[in-house]
Length: 227
Image (cartoon, rainbow, N blue to C red; front, top):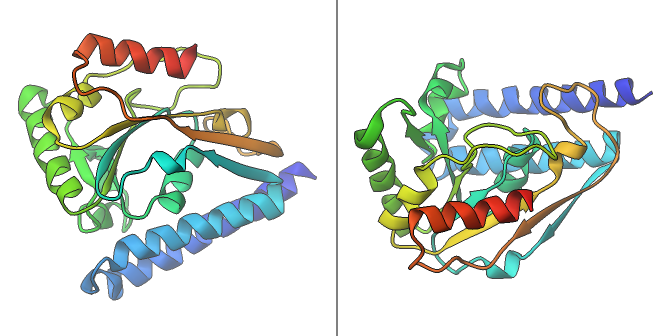
C-alpha cells in the first residue's frame, strides 16, 4: 500500500514539475518573478500531495526569526524534501546550487533566470567570490539565500562534512545568517522511492553572531546539525 501511495505522490511531483517547467519555458520567464512563483506553486502542490498520499506533514518552527529583508539560511540537508520545504516556506528563496544541475533538460535552464545562484565546487577562490557577489545581490533584492553547507544530502543520524561556502557567505554577505535543522531524512531517504508516514520538523534558529570566525561558525553548525 505504501508503494502505491508513494507512486501516486511521485506522479504528482514529477507531473506538476514538468507542466510548470514547460509553462516557464513558454511564458513564465517573460513575467517578473514568473519562474520563482511557479517553483513555489510546485513546492506547495508537492507538499500537499506528500501529506495526502504519504501521510507526511511538515512542522516548521522558528519562522519568526526571518528578517524583513534578505538573509542567508544555512540549512541542514537530509532529503530532496528539503528543497520543497524551503521553496514553499520562504517568501523569495534563492538557492545556491552546483553548476552541474544546469544540464538537466528544461529545468536546468530555468535555475539562473529564476535568481538561483550557481557555484563551481571545483573552482577554488574565484568560484567562492562569484558566489558571494551573487548572494549579496540576491539579499539586496530581498531574497532568502539558501545554502546547504554539507554540499549534499546526508542521511539522518549520520555526521556529514561541512564545506567552507557557508563561511564565505557569512563573511562576505551583509545579511543575517540563520542556521536551520531538519529530520526530513527519517521520512524520505536518499534515492528512496517509498516515503514513510509521519511528521518532519524544520527549525530555523536565531541569527549567528557576525563576529564568529570560520572555524567557530562551522563548529556551531556541526553542533546544531549533529548534536
